[in-house]
Image 1: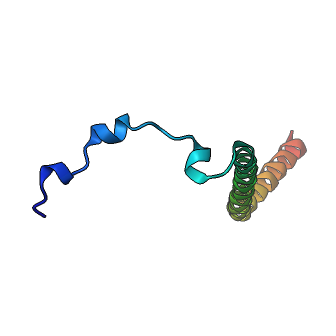
Image 2: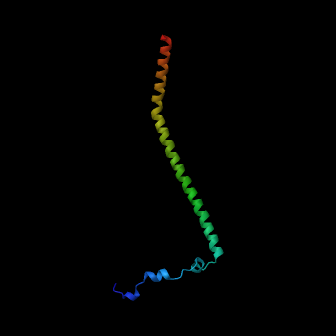
Length: 96
């Protein structure tokens, strides 16, 4: 661990080093890099859309199940209330 200070990398050296273009770093020409960028962009967007669609389908299924369960629970009370109101209205009409 005891290295002389002159062997440690210095941040200013890394910052002041001239930046190479992507084609210089990879050895690929700019046209090839541009095609790669385009394919990655298109592929990334397609992946995003697929994952989003799958997530939305899962959410849609969860919402459907929740609403169906609540409907099964609450519908009998609604039917009972409406029938009672109707019977009460029929009674009033007969006595009215």
